[in-house]
Image (cartoon, rainbow, N blue to C red; front, side, top):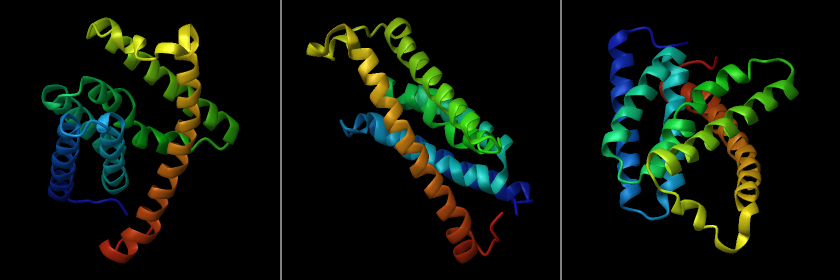
Length: 183
Protein backbone atom coordinates (compact mmCIF):
# COMPACT_ATOMS: atom_id res chain seq x y z
CA UNK A 1 0.00 0.00 0.00
CA UNK A 2 1.44 3.35 -1.05
CA UNK A 3 1.06 6.43 1.16
CA UNK A 4 -2.07 8.33 0.21
CA UNK A 5 -1.81 11.60 2.10
CA UNK A 6 0.24 14.24 0.37
CA UNK A 7 1.49 15.60 3.71
CA UNK A 8 2.94 12.16 4.59
CA UNK A 9 4.70 11.99 1.25
CA UNK A 10 6.15 15.48 1.62
CA UNK A 11 7.33 14.73 5.16
CA UNK A 12 9.00 11.48 4.14
CA UNK A 13 10.67 13.12 1.13
CA UNK A 14 11.87 16.01 3.30
CA UNK A 15 13.46 13.66 5.84
CA UNK A 16 15.09 11.51 3.16
CA UNK A 17 16.35 14.63 1.33
CA UNK A 18 17.93 15.91 4.54
CA UNK A 19 19.62 12.56 5.24
CA UNK A 20 20.84 12.18 1.66
CA UNK A 21 22.22 15.73 1.67
CA UNK A 22 23.98 15.09 4.98
CA UNK A 23 25.54 11.90 3.64
CA UNK A 24 26.72 13.70 0.52
CA UNK A 25 28.14 16.55 2.59
CA UNK A 26 30.09 14.00 4.65
CA UNK A 27 32.12 13.01 1.58
CA UNK A 28 34.34 15.97 2.40
CA UNK A 29 34.85 14.73 5.97
CA UNK A 30 35.78 11.09 5.34
CA UNK A 31 38.38 10.36 2.62
CA UNK A 32 37.00 6.87 1.89
CA UNK A 33 33.48 8.18 1.39
CA UNK A 34 33.65 8.99 -2.33
CA UNK A 35 31.68 5.86 -3.23
CA UNK A 36 30.26 4.78 0.14
CA UNK A 37 28.21 7.89 0.92
CA UNK A 38 26.55 8.22 -2.52
CA UNK A 39 25.71 4.51 -2.28
CA UNK A 40 24.14 4.95 1.17
CA UNK A 41 22.26 8.05 0.02
CA UNK A 42 20.93 6.03 -2.91
CA UNK A 43 19.76 3.27 -0.58
CA UNK A 44 17.57 5.81 1.22
CA UNK A 45 15.81 6.43 -2.09
CA UNK A 46 14.37 2.91 -1.84
CA UNK A 47 12.06 3.98 0.99
CA UNK A 48 10.64 6.83 -1.07
CA UNK A 49 10.18 4.66 -4.15
CA UNK A 50 8.34 2.00 -2.12
CA UNK A 51 6.26 4.34 0.05
CA UNK A 52 5.33 7.08 -2.43
CA UNK A 53 5.91 5.72 -5.93
CA UNK A 54 8.46 6.33 -8.67
CA UNK A 55 7.33 9.85 -9.61
CA UNK A 56 7.91 11.13 -6.07
CA UNK A 57 11.18 9.20 -6.01
CA UNK A 58 12.46 10.87 -9.17
CA UNK A 59 11.36 14.29 -7.89
CA UNK A 60 13.28 13.70 -4.69
CA UNK A 61 16.27 12.47 -6.68
CA UNK A 62 16.26 15.72 -8.68
CA UNK A 63 16.05 17.85 -5.51
CA UNK A 64 18.86 15.97 -3.76
CA UNK A 65 20.97 16.12 -6.92
CA UNK A 66 20.68 19.92 -6.97
CA UNK A 67 21.54 20.12 -3.26
CA UNK A 68 24.45 17.71 -3.74
CA UNK A 69 25.78 19.83 -6.61
CA UNK A 70 25.78 22.90 -4.38
CA UNK A 71 26.87 21.37 -1.05
CA UNK A 72 29.03 18.32 -1.76
CA UNK A 73 32.76 19.05 -1.40
CA UNK A 74 33.80 15.90 -3.31
CA UNK A 75 32.70 16.45 -6.92
CA UNK A 76 33.45 12.86 -7.91
CA UNK A 77 31.10 11.62 -5.16
CA UNK A 78 28.46 14.14 -6.22
CA UNK A 79 28.62 12.90 -9.80
CA UNK A 80 28.43 9.27 -8.68
CA UNK A 81 25.19 10.11 -6.86
CA UNK A 82 23.73 12.23 -9.67
CA UNK A 83 24.73 9.90 -12.49
CA UNK A 84 24.05 6.50 -10.88
CA UNK A 85 23.45 5.88 -7.15
CA UNK A 86 20.65 8.44 -6.84
CA UNK A 87 18.38 7.17 -9.57
CA UNK A 88 19.31 3.49 -9.86
CA UNK A 89 17.28 2.23 -6.88
CA UNK A 90 14.19 3.77 -8.49
CA UNK A 91 15.10 2.71 -12.04
CA UNK A 92 15.71 -0.84 -10.75
CA UNK A 93 11.99 -1.24 -9.98
CA UNK A 94 11.15 -0.70 -13.65
CA UNK A 95 13.98 -2.84 -15.00
CA UNK A 96 12.95 -5.76 -12.81
CA UNK A 97 9.41 -5.70 -14.18
CA UNK A 98 10.83 -7.08 -17.45
CA UNK A 99 9.91 -10.77 -17.38
CA UNK A 100 12.80 -11.95 -19.59
CA UNK A 101 15.62 -11.97 -16.99
CA UNK A 102 18.59 -11.85 -19.43
CA UNK A 103 17.14 -8.70 -21.03
CA UNK A 104 16.60 -7.14 -17.61
CA UNK A 105 20.22 -7.86 -16.62
CA UNK A 106 21.52 -6.54 -19.93
CA UNK A 107 19.57 -3.30 -19.54
CA UNK A 108 20.85 -2.90 -15.97
CA UNK A 109 24.43 -3.32 -17.23
CA UNK A 110 23.86 -0.80 -20.00
CA UNK A 111 22.42 1.71 -17.53
CA UNK A 112 25.40 1.22 -15.19
CA UNK A 113 28.04 1.51 -17.91
CA UNK A 114 26.48 4.54 -19.60
CA UNK A 115 26.09 6.32 -16.25
CA UNK A 116 29.64 5.60 -15.06
CA UNK A 117 31.30 6.47 -18.37
CA UNK A 118 29.32 9.72 -18.59
CA UNK A 119 30.19 10.58 -14.99
CA UNK A 120 33.90 10.17 -15.61
CA UNK A 121 33.73 12.05 -18.90
CA UNK A 122 32.13 14.95 -17.02
CA UNK A 123 34.80 14.73 -14.30
CA UNK A 124 37.61 14.79 -16.85
CA UNK A 125 36.31 17.25 -19.42
CA UNK A 126 33.84 19.52 -17.59
CA UNK A 127 35.45 19.69 -14.16
CA UNK A 128 38.89 19.66 -15.78
CA UNK A 129 40.27 16.83 -13.64
CA UNK A 130 42.27 14.76 -16.15
CA UNK A 131 44.69 13.73 -13.39
CA UNK A 132 42.10 11.15 -12.35
CA UNK A 133 43.43 8.99 -15.19
CA UNK A 134 47.03 9.33 -14.01
CA UNK A 135 46.01 7.95 -10.61
CA UNK A 136 45.95 4.52 -12.25
CA UNK A 137 49.72 4.75 -12.63
CA UNK A 138 51.40 1.47 -13.57
CA UNK A 139 48.27 -0.14 -14.96
CA UNK A 140 49.07 1.64 -18.19
CA UNK A 141 46.74 2.45 -21.02
CA UNK A 142 44.44 -0.49 -20.22
CA UNK A 143 43.68 0.71 -16.71
CA UNK A 144 40.40 2.33 -17.68
CA UNK A 145 39.13 -0.93 -19.17
CA UNK A 146 40.33 -2.95 -16.18
CA UNK A 147 38.62 -0.56 -13.78
CA UNK A 148 35.40 -0.60 -15.81
CA UNK A 149 35.47 -4.42 -15.80
CA UNK A 150 35.94 -4.47 -12.03
CA UNK A 151 33.19 -1.89 -11.75
CA UNK A 152 30.83 -4.21 -13.63
CA UNK A 153 31.60 -7.05 -11.22
CA UNK A 154 30.99 -4.73 -8.26
CA UNK A 155 27.79 -3.55 -9.91
CA UNK A 156 26.37 -7.08 -9.76
CA UNK A 157 27.30 -7.29 -6.07
CA UNK A 158 25.62 -3.90 -5.49
CA UNK A 159 22.53 -4.90 -7.47
CA UNK A 160 22.20 -8.15 -5.49
CA UNK A 161 22.66 -6.32 -2.17
CA UNK A 162 20.12 -3.68 -3.21
CA UNK A 163 17.60 -6.43 -4.01
CA UNK A 164 18.14 -7.96 -0.58
CA UNK A 165 17.77 -4.58 1.16
CA UNK A 166 14.57 -3.87 -0.79
CA UNK A 167 13.17 -7.28 0.20
CA UNK A 168 14.00 -6.74 3.88
CA UNK A 169 12.36 -3.32 3.77
CA UNK A 170 9.23 -4.46 1.92
CA UNK A 171 8.64 -7.86 3.56
CA UNK A 172 10.05 -7.44 7.06
CA UNK A 173 10.45 -3.78 8.08
CA UNK A 174 7.19 -2.40 6.61
CA UNK A 175 4.84 -5.06 8.06
CA UNK A 176 6.56 -5.22 11.45
CA UNK A 177 7.33 -1.55 12.17
CA UNK A 178 5.10 0.49 9.86
CA UNK A 179 2.14 -1.91 10.00
CA UNK A 180 1.88 -1.83 6.23
CA UNK A 181 1.47 -4.97 4.21
CA UNK A 182 4.02 -6.04 1.64
CA UNK A 183 3.22 -5.18 -1.96
